[in-house]
Length: 116
Image (cartoon, rainbow, N blue to C red; front, side, top):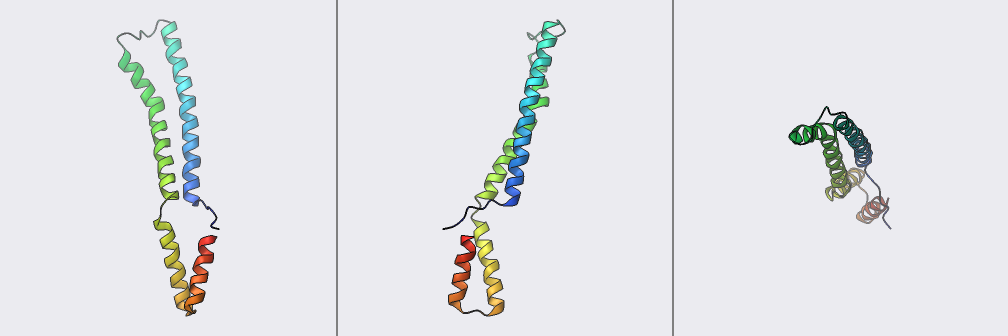
């Protein structure tokens, strides 16, 4: 049975993505309170200034949210990369070729390493 191991970089990308997502949620709540207060105080009229309100949200929230999505996708791509297994097999083959181990042992070593 092969254990599912996550690459360290993938985990780091996931953690940063979650932190950025949490920050974007907090920034969205904070930004909506600021806009609501400005409308209540009469400093901002939503009608006619939709672009400014949308721009305020985009500058405070959207970039962090999109960056979190990109980091999550990169982490997922790194985690599901099939070339990673081939790279591990090549490294193990190089190590065993240098030691001149019989072919039967080489296959056993590869199978054991891929199971870990």
